[in-house]
Length: 142
Image (cartoon, rainbow, N blue to C red):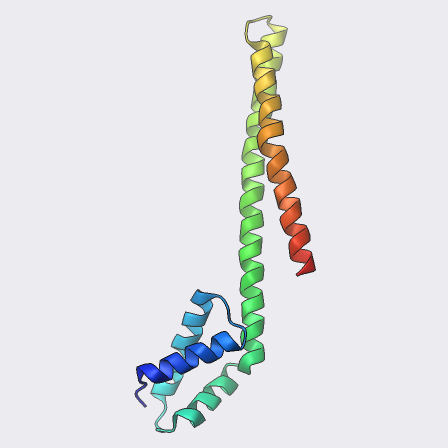
């Protein structure tokens, strides 16, 4: 069966209505459903659409896919935040070590290295850490 633009719009609207909010996921699901319908021999769109829904697990399965997509996006954000925290933390440790070496050797700018490490901790690490804790707490409630 060849699908018209009206059929594709119907499929996309029904997926949006039943909880598939993510645009990329909805496009993928529409593509899979359309491919399934176009490969069948019948010309009854409603029957083929219902078969496609049953084959892919129905609307409840689509909602689970949406939830899993949200979890994966959230996990990716948290991993990125943790990588930034690790990198900045490494830079802070390097600044502290340099400050210690400069202090032991009584070279100039030892206090500047220490001040840089403290500022980096307060202005970068602390807000990033608080933001990640906030995102995790919000995600637990939703």
